[in-house]
Image (cartoon, rainbow, N blue to C red; front, side, top):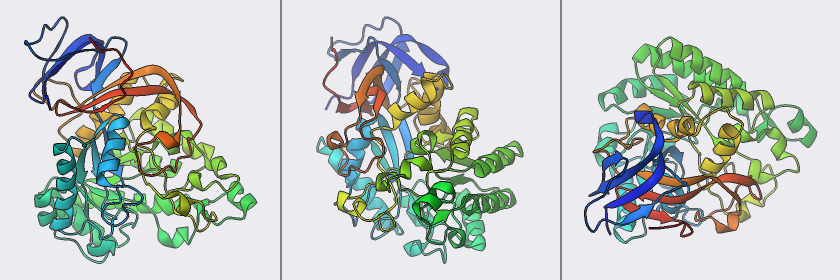
Length: 438
């Protein structure tokens, strides 16, 4: 497959170089060769018109569940990576709460090599970087052999889905991971406070007769981990921030210079607990959809840069599992194929972020925050590129997803922003097939 091409006359938006203007992008041997006006291009290099489209660094998602090994009926490494590419993502981080979990080098290596195998067969999607388990079996009792996990390809550690409850263990993790330059990702939840809750604690939960999860379940763990990050100098990253209290804690800690970062999901930006009415299991997630006050706080935290990036927390489930009674249905939604459009509608269309600002939070910032080689179109960098039409409207139809699962609360939404092509290391990994070429 060719790893060279010329994208001509697109609106190049690259926050890493403060670029937002019509230019050509030349890709040679899988890397960015030049970004300029009027590039002729070497003989034989395919030329593709990007007129009227945005050409930007490929999107990066540091929070994705691929379910393989152990739950391939929900998602596989291949289908998840392809869904990511369809959503404009060129790099995704795969969480370790599989069955068995990614708690040893062999398991970590399997995820990385499986993604590469499908790419060699011409069926690849986004790059897949495995995240290792912080503790064996995700049990939270002791550290995994982090050095071995990193050597096998792990880019971070977490017990995602299982909060790291033990303060001493979290301290050791924050100390030890500094030797490898990787972050500790935390699902911030005090399980004693959650106590079997299934949605946000408040008036809606009371009206529905459902057990609620209070804001304090998240914020108390965030506060503890901030103090431990200050004690150790380690980097803690708070996943799927959902409460106003957590946003404020992160804001104050960052002002003090603490190495804490956070992410916001498109669903916590766009939806509130009201989406659960009717016992809609497609709106059941953890942390739960919160109040309007929390939604606005998370949204503002992302706009202000307190929360570094957007992450989908893509969590596929089979429809039969989501068809259960609300209490028994699993937490989680899919989000890779709707994230860009939902964020354009929620943040760019109202004027709260420019397109460049959104790409910063979906590409450049996660790369910078997590030390990922990407998020830029600088010459010499990997040719990881998304080409999208920011004005094209479409209706979310879960039946058309490339993901193996369909559990989305956005079904039927009319959204704006359609991915046309996704390029990974110069290779076309997704092509919508319905835009002009020259």
